Image (cartoon, rainbow, N blue to C red):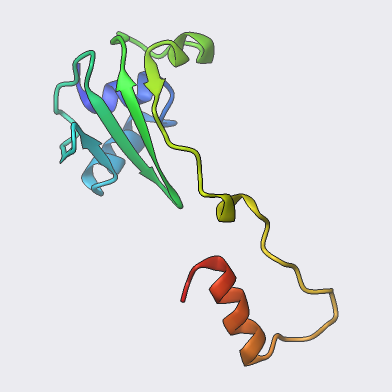
Length: 117
């Protein structure tokens, strides 16, 4: 089974063309290697899917011939994604409305909190 079809059938991508675009963009790795959309996938393979801010890791349990409902789709893979670091769970501080534009010092502090040193 093609990798893009599997990503679409287990609902990790909204459309098959979106799954193909993810593969072309280098956001998908199969067993640690960058892959094309037509790469065959087999049970036991590890699929890494990079989304903004986090990389999801899945192990293929079974192949699905067509798109199925969410409960059945979740049974087709095992989610091995590590939990996010605690700093990503905290919400960034908010400025009071009408407080004006932040100063350079405040902008640097906000960037440091967000991890954008």
